[in-house]
Structures are given as structure tokens and as C-alpha cells.
Length: 433
Picture 1: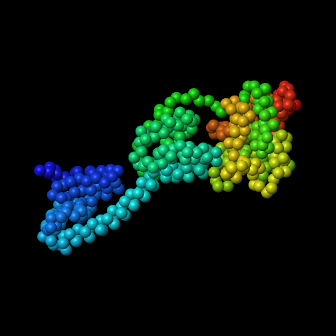
Picture 2 (picture 1 turned 180 degrees about the horizontal axis):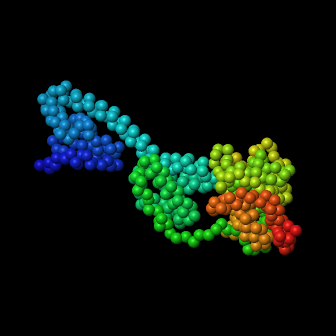
Picture 3 (picture 1 turned 180 degrees about the vertical axis):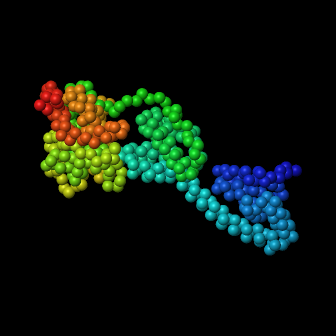
């Protein structure tokens, strides 16, 4: 004798949770509650026709519009009419309800699908990147998109941000830590910010952050490689740059070295910003689309030493109406030379782990002070560092324009001397006499 089903309770019906596939909770006497993956709950009833056959169950309604008690009463009516052959009174009505229920279920499931897509990591991270773009420098946004699109979305893209947990994210970050430790730390930072985006959108409760602080193994960190204490090595770097075969990349590297401008800004230089006659480069703080060009978002002017003007005039002689000073190289999709081309060139020269394009800023900051006796405030002004407090911000209004013009020429000459002869460089205070 088959085991009789235990009747359902209202609490069981209300608390029934969806699963990956539809599942059924039997109430007995042919009545059952079907819980669909979308969360829709349907009442179905089995019945027997006068000839003894048992057609497929019919849907007679949905919970909570139809309560448990109402479903039981409706099931009795359908089964009675089926036994008596009164199809019009019971079965036909049940089938009509089933058709309507199917349509309603399709609408509900489509709405649930759209909600899942809207709450997916792929969608939320995309909105996060779009929201951050206006306040970020181009390179910052590029790096964030690289991490999100290349590392996080392939593993987490379809996960629902409403229910994502630390255990879902941890394996991805740990795997990244073994392959790219620095990017793994960026990914952890971005992940926390994307969770905040989901909270701000109302997809998660205010307290539902993830525990990501100690999720990665400890890593010995340091600054970007830069030559700051070896004149001979820095001279070797400059010699290799001047001998590099690609003249566009060579010119961009020289401009970066003698001005100590951030590489991302250097490769995106526009002719409209450069005055070759005056020897000045006026860099807008923001790009035309409103994103940050300079890290501070403030306009910045720098003088151009003779060495910079030489390579810029070389680029100008090759100009064919282009907007940007340094055109993109083969297979590059950017409108101008990609900053990674500069890093790649230094690696090809044999300086991987020893010096980077961004490292010229550290070289100027250290050697400019120690070798050339350049005033710290002048150096900070040339490096366009953001003031740390209100007092410094007020003091930074002094642009040191003339001092910077003199020290940048001295810095370029210093690099030239290291490259050509290695002769001792005269400190700036002597040059100023």
C-alpha cells in the first residue's frame, strides 16, 4: 500500500523556497504545490476520468492568490467532476485556469530573469565602472576594466549580487594572488567597491559586506622599480632609449624621462597642448569626456627642455594632421600610442625589474634633490603631486614657473651627461649664479 502524503501546512507553503529545478510538495488526495526556479508557486491536481485513465495534472491556481484551503476545495471539485464526466463544470475550468496560469508564469519568470540579469555581477560591475569613470584618470579606469573584464567577470559574471558571499569570491582572488599578486590586491579593492555599488542600488542590505581583508596571502610590496642611486645605470637606461629602433616609442620615452610626466599623460599628448615656440606644454586636468587626464584633475603646465623640443619637432615633421603627438602602433586600438608600449620597450632593453617609465618620476625626486640640489617644493610642483593638507594646498599656488624651467633643463642636461660621458654634473645652485 503506497505511503500517504502528510498534508501541508500554510507555513510550509509560505516558506517553500525555489531550487535549480521545479520541485513538488504533495498535500495528498492528488493536490500538490509546484515550486518553480523563478519563485512561482502553482497548485496542481491529479484526477481520474470515468474510463479510469489519469491525464496529466492540471494547474488550478497560484499561491498566495489561491490559499491552501481554497486549493483543497478546488481540487475536490475538479476530481468529482472528472469522475462524473462533467468536464464542462470542472475540467474545462481547470484547463482554462491552467492556460492563464501558464501565461502568468511566463510573465513572472521573464521578470525574474530580468531581475537576475540586472543583479548579476556582470551588470553591477559594468554600472560601477561607468559610475567611476568621470572621477578617475584614464589609466585608472583602464586598469580597473582590465581586472574586472579579464579576471572577475569570467568567474563571477553570472552570480547574483543579491546573494553572493565571501566563499564565492575567495577562490577567484586566491587564484589571482598566485598568478598576478598586485592585480589580486586591486581586484580585492574593486570587489569591495562593487559590493558597495550593489548596496547603494538596494540589491543588498547595508550590513551585507564581504570579509575580504585577510583573504589574500601576505606579499612583500614595494615601489615601482626606478634607478635612484646609480648614475652609471641611469646613463645606461638613457643610452638604450636613444638607441631604440622605434622612433615614436623612443620619442615618447625621452619626453617622459626629461619631463617626469606620468607615462599615460605623455603618450596622450595632443599638438594643441604644445607650444614649440615658447617651449611649454599645457596639459588639461580633464579629458574632453570629463574623465581625469591629470591624477589631480587640475590643469598643469610644464616647460619643455631642449631635449624634449628636439624629439617633439621630429614628431612634428612626421605629422599628417593627427590630433595626437604619438600615433598608435600596429594592432593598437587606442587613438594614440599605448602606454604599455613604453614599458614593453624598457623590458626589451633589459631593464625589467630595474626601471620603469613611471620610475623617471622617482629618479627626478631623488636624484634631483641629491645630485642637483633642487628645492623639494619645486620638485613636488613639477611632479604635480596633490597637496596633503590645506596649508600645502595654499602654498602650492606658487607654481615656481621660472625655477621649474631652469631645473627641468638642468635635469635633461644631467641625463644627457650620464648618457654621453658620465661627467660630474654641476649642482643647480651653481647653475643659478
